[in-house]
Image (cartoon, rainbow, N blue to C red; front, side, top):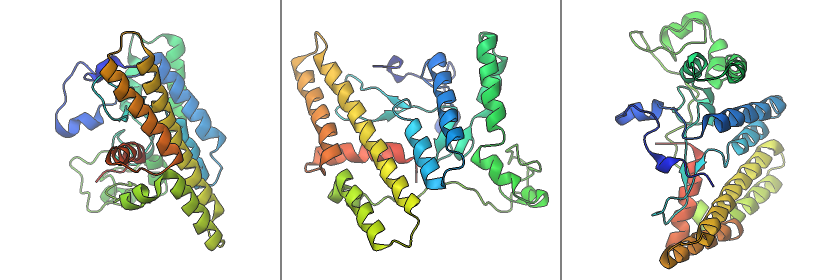
Length: 288
């Protein structure tokens, strides 16, 4: 189990307000982070030509549980996440949206004298691949150069660099997915098993629709279930540790029970409902 240093400030500098979300110094140890980013890239490359819903579901799954943080000593609910400099997200936390890379982080790491030459090459290979594969850069590459001056990035003409400062920025046409309102009533009334049944019912009722879309939903729901079981395992391990306070043991056992139950059944208590909302919101990535 990885505690990640009690989730203290990610870097030596302090951050306030919106600056915090631009800080992508992961709490994951660098060797482990580099391994994960390469694994994520291999998944993307292997399914690059898959239908969009399947590709996104596979890449979504490839991020977990690596991006999750462990259970803290005072937690009564499971669900904490890290921010990585490479991945897939709906919100502006890696300097871009969709499939994203924090290029500034990569450039700084490549120049870091503490990074050995082998790891430097690995970083360069990742940077070079994603330079033309992030969602924003592929999106901008399709735009007319003159349009870019006034839309999306204000002043960007090469489809590669994002810089809004001091530019006209008359209109935006971003591929961001945020500010949506999730149907929590449906989530809580049906639970994860009920959502699986609903997908099956909708697909049967509408055979004219793209079957890959429905399969992508099923795959994403299985990722949510995987996360719940991962946290259940963590709670179980903590409860089994020598010297754990008896009161804390009961708390951890309850956390484990709830996480395992939510994979099989809908929530029936307020605490179970809160736990499902936390995990589901943590993974969906959309923010108001």
